Structures are given as C-alpha cells and as structure tokens.
Image (cartoon, rainbow, N blue to C red; front, side, top):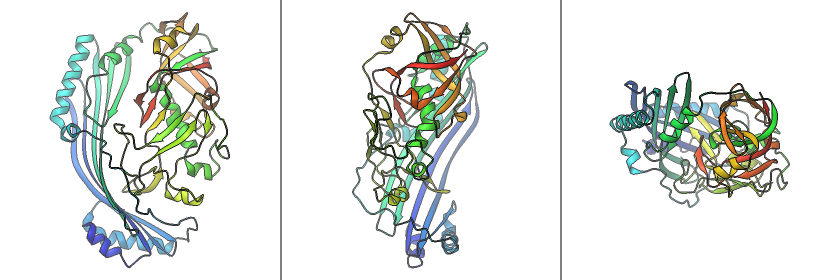
Length: 430
C-alpha cells in the first residue's frame, strides 16, 4: 500500500512526506471486582504533507483504500495556501541507532494477563489492609508500528510500545489516585508504598501559613514540568516571544546544582526511540547544565528558522502535523537520602501530590496549587497529614532556592526522571 501511495503522489508535487502508523490498542476499565469495559482493536492510517512551490498541504485518513482522495486533498490545500518562507525541507537521510524500547513480554501481554495482574494487586492490597477498596482501574497498552517515507529518500520504520495503569484506592473518606507507566509489563511493585500513602492521610490537621522548606515527591514535582517547563523550552514558543527563556541561552538561570537533559537515546526509558516522527535520529540534548541554559528542543521547521539542526523532538499522530515535545526529561541526582532530607528540616512539608496544575501560568511559572497529599515535618520527623493547604509562588524562583537534592531518580509523568528535591522556602497558605 505504501508503494501505491508513493507512486500516486510522486511527480505531482515538489516534495512529499508520508507518515504511516498502525496501532494495536488494549483499553480496560474495571474496579476491584469486575471489568466494566474492554476495548481492543487495530487502527491504521497515514498522514501526508506535500510541498508545491513552498506552499504546504496536509491531509490524513484512517482508510488506506482512500489514499488517492487523501493525496488529492493535500495537493488542493497546498495550492490554496500561502507561500511559507520559513519552510526549507523535510528530513534528510541520516544513520540512526536502533533502539528497542519495549519488552517482548509487553507485546504479548493481553486482557487475560491484565486480569491476572489485577487480581494480584487486589490480593496484595487486601493483605496489607482489608478495609481498602479499589474503586477504579484504567489500563492502557499501545503498540505502534510507524513508518516515515519522504521525497529525500528516507524510508524508516520502527516499533514502540508502552502501557499505563491508573487505580484509585479508597479508605473511608480518603482516596488516592495511583499511576504507573512503563515499556515493560507492570507489576505489583508499588502497591505497598501506595497503601502506606493512603493510610498516612488519616487525622489531617490544619497548619498556619508561612514560608517553609518543602520536599517535593517526584509525582508532585512533575506538575511544574508538565504545566510550564516544557512550554518554555519549546523552540516554537521561544521564537514567538512567549517563552520566559528567550534570549537567555548561556545565562545562569537556576541553582548551579541543576542539570536537565532530554534524552531519547537512553535504553530502558519509556520514550526512547530510534528516530522522531519526522525521521530525525534521536539524540541527547542538554537544556540546563550546572544552572546555565544551554538550549531548547526543536523539530525540523523550528530548527530551520534559526539555521540549526532538529534535536529529534517531533511527535505526531496521523491527524495532526508534527509538534515539539520532550522525550525523556532527566534531572541530575544529588547525594541525600529521603530520610536525610526529612531530618534536615525543623518545620516544613513533604508533598506527594498537587491539584490545579492547569491553572499554572505556563509562560511565567507562577502557580497556586492545592496540596492533595502532604505531610507536616517537625524537628526532622513526619508528624501528621495536612488539610486545607495551598502553596503559591514562582517555579523558576524556586529553582534558585534549592537546599538539597535526593539520591537517584524515579520515573513519573509523561517521561520525567526526577530526584526528590528540597526547596529552602516556599509560601504555604493554611
């Protein structure tokens, strides 16, 4: 079929790019007792970009038999569009490192495997605390076979796979949503930690407003990255004058202990891949090094505007053109254990999760979050959970007020690998 599409579009346009994606999806919704919804299926489709005299057209379809109509539509749109002076080319052939980002066990994991895993989780939770209910479970597995073909001679194919699991634990009036995602089969490895999280929420107390040290669990810290940091390191936002980091490359903007890189090459990480969704080989990109801003993440279009190379950060689906996104965003680790971080605090908070990330000002980093899971620390010990507490401030000022960084990194969010971080002073509203 791909040969048919190439034959039909070739000669009608100056340049073309075909993005083909075949997705095998398993989606299950359940509770601790039964499955409420099971969906499994295969979706095939392709997207086409064509260029005619620097005019670009885009079209897509989920019906491969309609490929001629899709090509004709892309050509019509290109002819109707204005000339795009910033467009230069599609990806050129380069060598890439073959990366397998999934386990064979994950490829074979099916609904039967899920229900076996679900039972193991239910049994483990019951063994730890028989009063806890599992009220909601959502499982998703996606296997994507992608292929990119363009008029420059690229013909790259790759397979990526991942799965995610969200379940809600409830004990009395308290509940927590728990998340896990990976590119191997999920296990019961986090159940004990999550049961203890829920149990720790009882007997909440109010605290007074103040500026105090706060330790952010990786789950809580990922909210800042998802709702602001990714926006500000996106080259398109920088070029449009929307990013706080515009004209700051080479400047020290964070504490010197902070280094952050985007790495789509590292084996075993959830978003590692051989090449991005335009055919650019994956690579490692330093964004912050010892507190200094080193650069941004690019797709081909934004890189061409500055005469640079793409950093391999294009993502797409068949229904939209490529856009810029991180792969695996990795923070440097420190040298303190969780216990050492807690012991160093006279009065402060340990925050596990936050609510209200969508209200954060993505450009400036100003925030006001509700603390949904937080523990009060006094004289180096966790004392009790807190209620009716908010935190407010500016994320980027926080990154210049770091006390200590924890050992090791854990995966949370869409592809963040983070340590525990203790910030010196954060404003809490009690």
